[in-house]
Image (cartoon, rainbow, N blue to C red; front, side, top):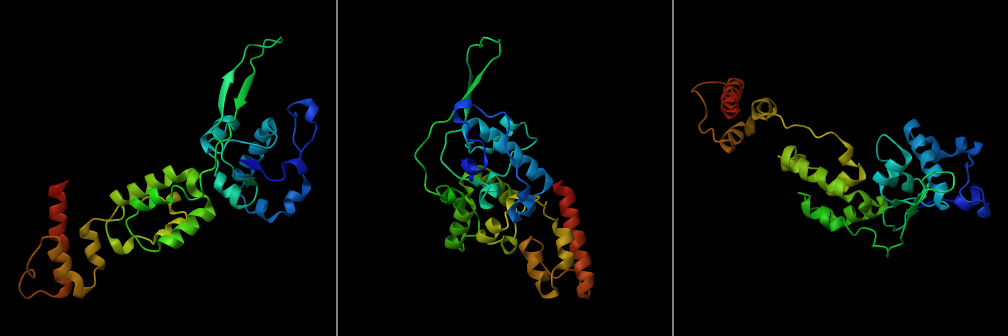
Length: 248
């Protein structure tokens, strides 16, 4: 991918090799997109600009490669920089580095090779993710959001998060967000919550749902004869707690 407006803002000394510096302009402070970044993201973006000077404004589209080459603590969110207009997406093979023979000064020189590949259509990996998503509603809206955010580059991360949430968090269908909501709110950045045990959930179950809740969990009957709803709720919670202890 390419840094936006690189040729406009950066040195054009094509006969002098890699520039030893890049230009930063004071009008960044009046740029709304720049001001929306966190301090850490601003540092990442400047590091990306410095890296891009090696290739006339181009960088790899692989966040992990960019992390290694700029010595960042974590992979940068390239999709956010794309959405804000700082980067222009392109199709590249990740950078591979080779060491050439030492030059006359005894320094090893690294040659970064980037080979252009035919572009895959934006949204090419949406179907792979949607197949894993448990709530099959709003597919067209989800695809539009996926394309707008250009998520193909981090599809593996999103798919892994979805699979994990299905295993750990999304046990009740009513609490699974719409696919478009998951994408628009970038829920894969949220912490995965460990589900509460049934003995805690029963405390908030409406009174008219208590019996069906108990029967669904294999506890038949109406409890001891003559007890009130609150007493039945306490009795059911105790039964579920006993079962959970045996399971553990």
